[in-house]
Length: 199
Ligand code: IMP
Image 1 (cartoon, rainbow, N blue to C red):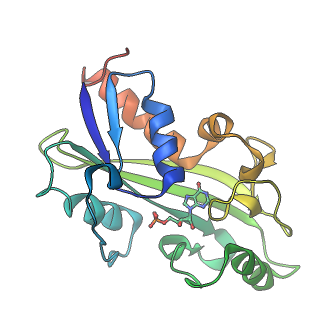
Image 2: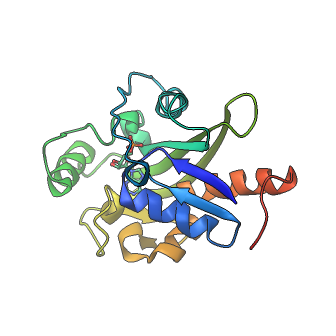
Image 3: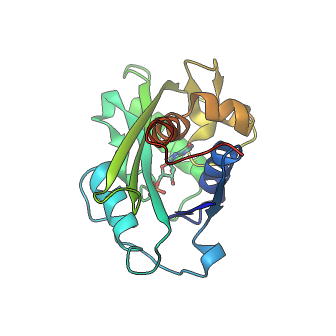
């Protein structure tokens, strides 16, 4: 059984990974599962740099395969803001206030075109770290829609799903989400290289 540590305590992210690997001979652990309490300063300037920092910080603590994900929302007309700052932007405010702020920044005239980026860094699988990137394309909604409470899901209208991410259940979100696409690339790579087996 391949053991994978997902370098996150975000239950939404962990659930997405678990759902993807469920049909394989893989056990997915969160940091909490392994009693690892670590806070990595995301001082990188790109998703790739931050994903590496998150995975590398765990290298000394485990021999398991480590997968980190750095992700965020990029709004084209705001020069890809909030991007790598997606979780830190208005850090102490609820997402409902972030949605209002973003809508103020866009006003009536700026383009609402946006995408989610998920960049995975995988360590301890090959000698060198490897990376997989997935995008989900969408538009910023003026009003939040749906029940999921994860980050920007309620104001992200997915062009592929024709619904906000918060209106999708986890299986449907996985089919079109940035993380789903990046994980799919990783799984394809692992299958092609005989690193992954179905149950
Ligand atoms: P990270 O955990 O440092 O990668 O920060 C990612 C941040 O980007 C999250 O805290 C959310 O604000 C946002 N984000 C990333 N993926 C999603 C998603 O699937 N839905 C909603 N927000 C997301």
